[in-house]
Image 1: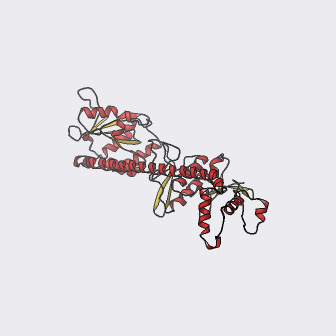
Image 2: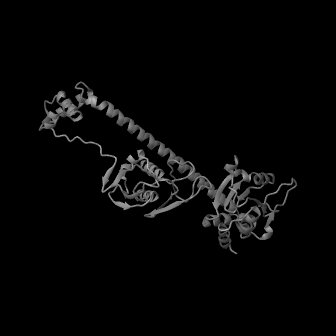
Image 3: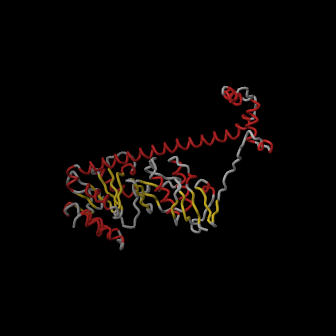
Length: 393
């Protein structure tokens, strides 16, 4: 069978998984290796003079040999599982080791200095047909003998460096944006605490400057500082007389309530909802009002998040390539359907529009979706108040 056919056959094992390591090797690992190598190029459990051996040695007796460490299908792979094979490769002066349980395939480069985690080049899954095909093709006999495996490693390593740089730049950008928001909040608090006093103090430099600027306008010739402070005083502490004065008409505004209720339904904006606990199973959204005034029907919290991300994806500002707001091992948004931590459950939703695609983690609670979308709005400088959610009555 071809490599693609062997991959499809191996994927079918998910319905009836191998029961132990031996079955995993016979049903999945060895057939995939034999799809890229003649049988005689693969040796099983051949010990060296020290009595140590890997599960498989590929291209034995040549300068290009590499090793496979196999684990049972249900074993969650860890870097230390590759330690024995890496020690064996190091003892024999060889470079590459593959660690696999049939479901996940990892490539390690023994020439990389540092910890085992530093030696991990890439990891692909059995269900990702395209990535696994590229991975196994790079390990094939033709590629190994022609230097294709080294080129593959160099390409993947460069991609990892670019992604690490993007994550660093994103983190730095988020830190700058966070500091800017904190500074804005400090300034706003300072204005609230000091500005009323300055504007009501006839001797303050601020009132003197305003009076001077006004006095240079023809209509305000002869204006006094007392008149300016009186005007501001009427704004901050309006009296019945000042409200009746014909010369000044001031509308005192009060903040809108957190809830607006129409026909029994209640609507909240995304900013206010950060301080309102919800029960995600019993409290469901029925509509999302977008910042541009349009409204879309939604029936679940994941549907709310999808519509919010879809709208943000259509805006001029780019969405972060990698984004998380709370969970440190899982991405909320990614450019591919993968989490940072190997083996984390993936329930990504694909969101595409105008030639742009992102993958959104759908495995979150309603409260987490609200927090994630709020954090995403702040990250791209979109006011979260623009999103309003209507609940079912």
